[in-house]
Amino acid sequence: MKMSENKKKYVIAITGGGTGGHIYPGIAVADEIRNLVDKDVILEIHWIGSSKGMDRTLVEKSFVSNDGSIDAFHGIPCGKLRRYISFQNFIDLFKTFAGFVKAFFILAKLKPNVLFSKGGFVSVPPCLAASILKIPFFTHECDFTPGLATRINSKKAKHVLVSYEDTKKYFSEPVKSKCIATGNPVRPVFYSDHAAEGRKFLGIPEDNKKPVLLVIGGSLGALQINNLVTESLEELKKNFIVVHQTGKAFAEAHPEIMSSGNENYKPYAFIYGEMVSVLQAADVVLSRAGANSLSECAVCAKPMVLIPLCGSGTRGDQVDNARYFEEKGAAVVLAGLEATKEKLLSKILEFTDESRRSEMSARCAELYGSKRPVKVIAEKVLEEAGL
Image (cartoon, rainbow, N blue to C red; front, top):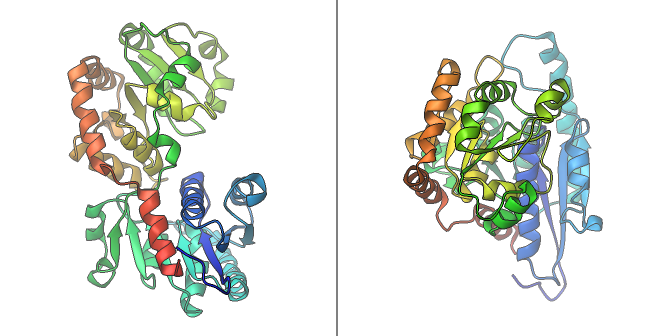
């Protein structure tokens, strides 16, 4: 990756947003791109996201001025893609069109060598604009089954990057030929062993032999999981050290639970910078089935008990993710009506057996092997950019 004699400037655009699940992996790709490029190459990385919501706040923390990798954020209007009839859908058509117009002029001015889409409906207008401007773009799908934004973007994408080889079957034959299984990008910190730091943070003695059960439901918590854990807590504490990230709302509503911590129960409203080390210190993880959490657990080779988000408010992507991991022997799943106190205890108590944990840990490790998806994706983006 050597710079040409005339010091040509390279520009890479990234689009995506709406949730941290689209933004954080995209930032990880930007960081890896910056790491792989020679220091004397003139490179700019621009992010196109929603002008409202969390996009700008999260991305600006990764600006070059803050020792990050992204040079600028460009906000565009963004509608929402609903799967039900609503008058708001009509209004959002105009937002989407306005987003396309703004994205078109942003890309026309930046003239990026390549556009990388991490998903979310905000990515659709920039990808459409890129196709009209003849700017090559890649789109990445983190879930096992592709979402609607990915399906739309895939039509004109040069390559469709998917997290799993089996995901290719969900696309038409013309699109399938453009699919590349790269895995889901995970930050490099997950590949280093920080388990000792995690145990220290949690106050777990070095001579403790009881396995650690980490309960996570996303940054906001998951009421279903929180309720099941608190109902089962006495039995769980007999067999595990239970580390419970409840989410802020649950913590505020149940101060008596938050104050009941002891050597076998450690509740937290939210675990911030220490989450990587805490995850690595865990022996078993009880979680939802969001794509990024699953990938991070897989990289850390953690056995999982999954309670995926179900119901009319979701397209079923978490159930699909969870069933895939179950099929590969990397998790056990309690979906819908299966998620009862009795069944939860039955599944989790299996992992008091060290051999059971070791078996599933090995299956998790096999999902990605030695491949680092973030590096694979960054290299493909740079290759397309001519670096």
